[in-house]
Image (tube, rainbow, N blue to C red; front, side):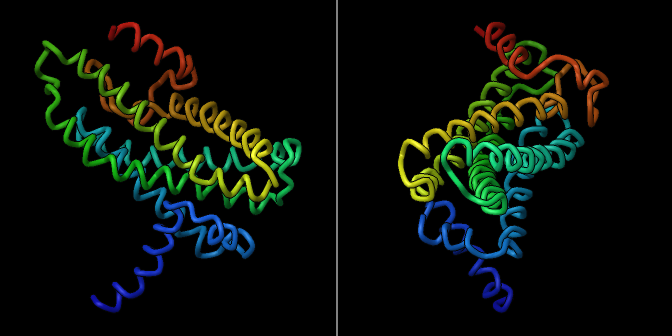
Length: 238
């Protein structure tokens, strides 16, 4: 047990360094090969987003919790890969001349930070779900469902923005100025929001609607979009 703890200690220290956004250390990581460090960041994404996904789906059904625990990390990984390609092309146009390999590593790092934050929020979401009206309680269940959806949108947005902003100092240094970093960060956040939100819509359900069966994907998965659904939920709640 002690030997295993000693092996995990450097990884825990590296995650702490990433969460603090220590520019010099993170910049040195980008200078070397991806290797085991990339695997560590992917593991953080799988664990943090998986725990949050399980808490997200538990209100509907334990099976929905399992489905969401699998799908939510998948969305983050697909978004990270897609955004890495987009940012690899956009960054030089916006004034940040870095190789694709470094751009990809930086994107994965930001998603690792976001996933660690989501994992930290998982117990809070689980507490909210525990105290939410059960599905059998018809009065109030529609309100609880809408409130849970908006709570998840808020937490995920907070984690995503924080994960990207944590590396803003690094982008400022790599780009040689704040103006370049602002442009790259804006494109980064826009890509995360657009790609991640639409992937979330396609791979729904996550919470699971009270009046629909538990399933991995909806039969009409490609139809509609995420933004329209959030607007309808918001107007229906208020």
